[in-house]
Amino acid sequence: MLKIVEEPPEHLIFVFATTEPEKVLPTIRSRTHHYPFRLLAPRTMRALIERICAGEGVSLDDAVYPLVIRAGGGSPRDTLSVLDQLLAGAEGGVTYAQALGLLGATDVALIDDAVDALSAGDAAALFGAVESVIDAGHDPRRFATDLLERFRDLIVLQAVPDAAARGVVDAPGDVLDRMRDQAAQIGTATLTRYAEVVHAGLGEMRGATAPRLLLEVICARLLLPSASDTESALLARIERIENRLDLSIPAGVSGGVWVGPMAPVGGASGAVSGPSVAPVGGDAASVVRPAAPVGGDADVAASVRRKWTTVMEKVRERSRTLDVMLAGAVVRAVDGNTLVLMHQSAPLAKRLAEQRNAAVIEDVLKDALGVAWRVRYEVAGDEPAPQPIADPAVEAQRAEEDSMLAEAESDGAPDVPRRDPEEAAVELLQNELGARRIDG
Image 1 (cartoon, rainbow, N blue to C red):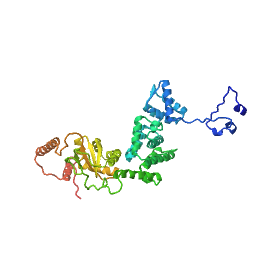
Image 2: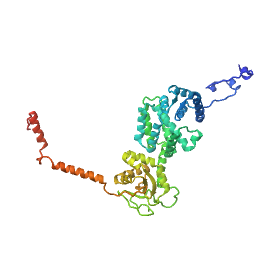
Image 3: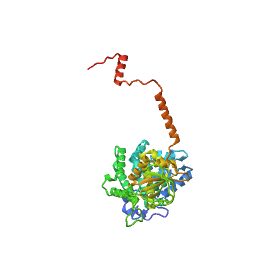
Image 4: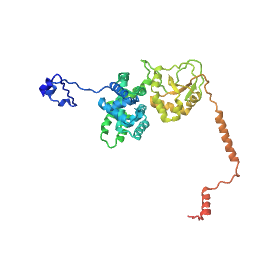
C-alpha cells in the first residue's frame, strides 16, 4: 500500500480527504502533499451564491445574502445547504422576511433597537426590545449571538473605516449607515465590554432552563458598568467621563483659564455681535431672530451635535410632545453657558422657550451631557419673531366658556338651602325601605 501511494501509476492519482488530519498515520503523511481546505471569505462566498442563483434563475434580496453566509459559517457546503433550504420554502425568490422566518435569525430592526437603547442608556427601551424578541418567537440565545456579532461589526468599523469595502463587514447599505452612526456614538472600550458581557452570558445560557431570564440579566449588566469591578467596566466608566469632558473643555485650549459651558447658570452669557434682537417669551430661555454668527466655541458645538441623538432619546423619555416639537431644531452654536438652537417654526420655538419646557430640556442636558446650560432659540427664515400676545382663538374660547357657566348659574330654580348629606340619606332610607333610625 505504501509503495503504491509513494509511486502510483501514471494514470492514477490518490486524493485523501479527511476532517481529522491529526489521525492520519505518519507513514502516509510523509508520502503525500498536504492541501488544507479553508473557510471562504464572505465576499468570495457571496460571489459564489450570486453565480449559482443567476444560473438557476432565482432572485434573492440583498439583505438575504448576509443571513445565508452567516448561517453557513464560511463553509460552501453548509452555505449551499442553507440556500437549498430557503429555496425549498419559497417560490421564485426569497425575501428578507421569508429568510428570517425560515432561518430563525433575528430581525435587524430589533438589533438596532437594542444597540440604540444601550447607546442612550435607556433601560426601558432595551427591555422593550427583549420583549419584542420573545413576542416574535425568536430564540433568546440566537438574539444574544446576533447581538454579539453586531458588537463585533461595530468594533471592526471603528478600527477599519473601510471595512465594508474590504469585505470584513458584510451588510446592506442602509444597515451599514446605521452601524456607522452607532459606532460613532459608542466608545471602543464600551463596545469591548458589551462584547465580553454578552460572550460570557452565552456560556451561561448553554443548557439553561430559563434563557429569557438570563438574557434580561445580561441586559442589566450591560446597562450598569458600575456593578462590576473588572478592567473593562472601569474603562467604560472612564470613557463616559471623557465624553462629558469633551463638551466642557474645547479642543485646542491649553493653559490659562477658560470660562465656558461649565460656568454657573446664573453667570453672564457671551456677547452676541450684530444688530440687537428682542427676546420672546420665558425667563429661562428666549427666542430671537438670527442676526449674526454667535461667538461660541465651534469645537464644543460639534461635540454637542455628535451627542444630540442621546439628548433626543432622553427628551423622548421625559415627554413625547416635547420630543416632537424639538425634532425640527438643530444645534447652531454654544455661546458661553448658553446652547443656541435653530428652529424652522417660530410658533414651536416660542412654545419650547416657555418655562416648563425649557426646564425639562435644561435638565436633560445636565443628565446627558453633564453641563448646566441655558437654552436660546433662533428662528430660521425671514418671518418676524412671534410676539408674546394672547391667541385670539384661545381668548374667544375662554370667553364662551365663561358665558356658558354664567348662564347655567343664572338659570334654574331659586336658591335652596343646602341639606346635610347624612340627613338626606336617612330620609331616603325611611321613605323607600321603611327603615327606622336606631339611636345609640
